[in-house]
Length: 394
Figure 1 (tube, rainbow, N blue to C red):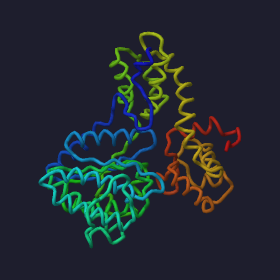
Figure 2: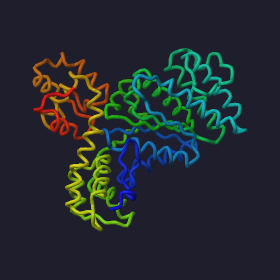
Figure 3: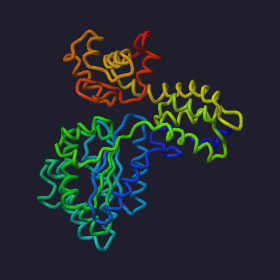
């Protein structure tokens, strides 16, 4: 088949041609977006799931829904080692400058900009090429305690948005990388917004441990957030994600090929895109057949090994690699921490710092007390292919 017309383009955050199986999440987001414009409260949403399940794709789609409804949006990816305040200041500055063009919101937007200037000054933050050309407001968002200051800043932004007849949607990806103090401050700010019924929405995405991190930061987080689980697609949805793009291009795929793809990918969206991409390029006839799907497995696995899996493994130190390889040798997981310790001839306590460091890198998480699992689907199979019995490559 013509590779130029290949509908599949696997990549980080790339939207698949058919967003199947996520209707309920998007429907809930659509309702929340519309309610915000009417001044009606909605719970913030935190999308949770493993790597490669399409959380970033969903955040991008939700941002699009919000923009189409008339929301002002701010999208952030939380990197490791950067403060939330540093990420937020330029984004909020942009939002307030847009709101200040509304005659009805000029006063409130000016007040919010003064609060932002106070906030930026006390945390000694710069704002790139933008400047906040107003005087700071003494006594507002300037205590130096982000858990006190961020709620005050969010309230001012929400009041400006309401005055303009608008809403503000904040989207943060990779929430697990936020510092604990920053996550607590964000939760307090969203709680204050909810109490005041201001038109501010939050959508976050992160690894499964984010629910526990939020609860640890503030006990009421479980009531503040809705936590939609983003997992592998059900069989019918997975088949639709492959079949529909193929048919939209005027081509066909056999049921046998679809079954093979779903079996090999286990319904994980990123893997589905990779298999679909390879199947299309391999197929010679008018239809993608079982033989094409079987042949695609080799090419798809090689691409995943060289990219999706390898870039994550390369972030680990030699001792951390030793730990995850020991996990893989125990099977598919989840794994008991005590079993990993036994495999490494160490104590559970002595491995604690190493385990915590791997968790902080987003490679593993604890689905329940005493258990550990990979955040990357089928990562154990990758490790078995390349490192078990061959010596650890560093």
